[in-house]
Length: 347
Image (cartoon, rainbow, N blue to C red):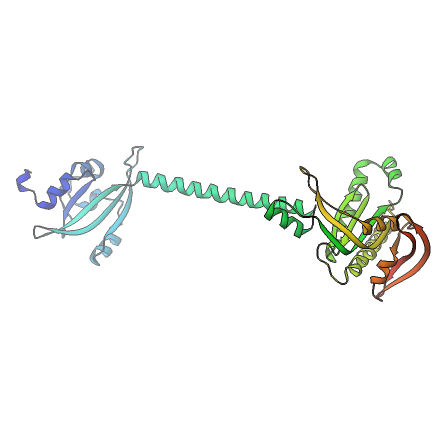
């Protein structure tokens, strides 16, 4: 076919590098195809010029419905092989040129687009996976830090990178220590001893959390908890007293069911203290001050499985607790002090 006999549409198609074919609008027979279309889509074993015979991956029923409604139809075609042009998208639409109506079939290489989409999808999946792993790691670190410090202190450290020491004029402190623990470390198998201690401390943690108190730290067999830090309420002594009573109840029940008997001493005191992060590379939240020292003195004066409380702590309790006076004693650093036993919580 000479260039003089080509229609304007055919001339335009010939100039395109993209694969293009023009078919009769009614018969769908190919009237013209450029070299790119011939190379990619013309099936050498098919003698017919019917467009459908060469574009066999097109859903022609669906294509006809869209074309009859005046819309274009697009279909992805996999030509096979490993060439760059193996992934094509063919668009079918009607055009008019020189007073004639044609069905235009135009191919477009989508291999790079598909590759880019695949890479973007892979990156998206990888980013989502990394985000989930980062979120899990963040949660793990948060849990670890919340085991070391109160939530408000953690939030201040997270938001500002530092914390400010706080003075609390009225707080309640629990100091617990196990009886004859040093002897137990010599006589008992280490793994079994630590496992039991971990079980007991885990139960104490749950009790402490239940009554909105904070476990500050454990040092060997010592357990230190506080109420009124950082959130000070009118009844923080009551909360901590309930914690102590339930710790005693738990250990009594555990001892009844186990051959290895554990006994503690608990001291409770009320007063002022300072709460602060200490350390530069290894963070730890700690408390200092009169209330802490007095609670330690109360624990030292306590009998096994007893709960000894200071006068100030007893005065802060309501009538739901039964207490009894032990004695008036000289307490190191505090002079003469009346001390009491916290016997039980009334039902």
